[in-house]
Length: 549
Image (tube, rainbow, N blue to C red):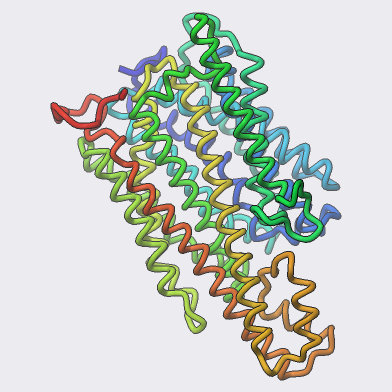
């Protein structure tokens, strides 16, 4: 039976509840990709640089990562439904502020701060509300649809942003989010809530340590492309000759270690920690969280690389780039919806392995298909495979993590789960981006140096100006820059050829790292249970499908 006060929902009510929660998940995920195709336009409109706007986008991820665990605990304190609705109000206020933002500081307040705090309240509450409104046997399908809504939002984000920017204004995206929030708040009355049996205590020192530790670590990851992972780039902050990225990540890890020590101390004294240390010894839970981490690492890395290939290397418009990503949404939805419906008793471990394998295969196929003469059609099959893999994982992982603990801990698990997914997304984007730029720079400078058609003064200037990392430029952008510099036809063609080869080398390197991450994930699937929660198939007598190790 469901853990919510209202118990399992009737079919009509359940559909409405599921649509409400899925809409919330969709909205939270949309902002991570909707403006990726419109960064230059938004930056010009609010009077900032592309780097400034990228800082606003990454700050949104950073705020979510810092406050997600605390947001889950607040939900347990005030009630999951109340946390969900308050989060929606804060998020809607942030969207409205962003839609009207005249400059970067106001954009930061609306997009990064208010929307980030709202998401930190909403996302853990969604996990708990699914557990509270659906019976155990229906949760895999419910979690699959809710998770799929978030993944589809990431896939449709570039298309939505491209249409809005091309035909209307980017501001209409955020104005539309306000309307969606109002609709969610109207429908949320149908959602049942189970008020906590006792008034929980919020561990303030633990909240500060966890937010600071996660915040420093994620900030370091997000700044890696600009500052360099280990060797500092020119004019980047450094200490003892090592990039500030390393020190931020080490500081984050140290604070996280202190947080875990503090939580253990509270538990030993019989006090209430922010996160129950016993959760880290739960084999099923840690297995599900590990898969979430790798899923979002690969997923967001792909969403970083593929749009760049389509829009820059192939010169597609923002709208056509979004259209080319749609095949991923088709197989994602199909897998997320149909697997729980057609195979309700299928082994979660088998589905997760199939999903990881499909994402790995998609990355490898795209890696093999990248070629100077390839067109936009080469991404179709890889995206179909990656979409199926994402949908397969979405159909199982939410149920795997929440079923590993009592319903009373579902909001707490929701906070940890969303922290892990944000961490995976941040690392995936930063890893793919930094490796792509590093390989692109090396390849471009090597080719330019070896080209007899390029004068020595151009080679010297290229080495000096691009030592901090070659920008990912289209042929049109590079041609315009060369024309402005007065380069002749032979030099222009040689530089364009070097740029085209370097782009492909960078893309291949990024995809290779993502494929390696997918392969690594397969080694951790043993912790995923072999049977569904309360499945009609009896569990095996031996094996590693138990909840705790």
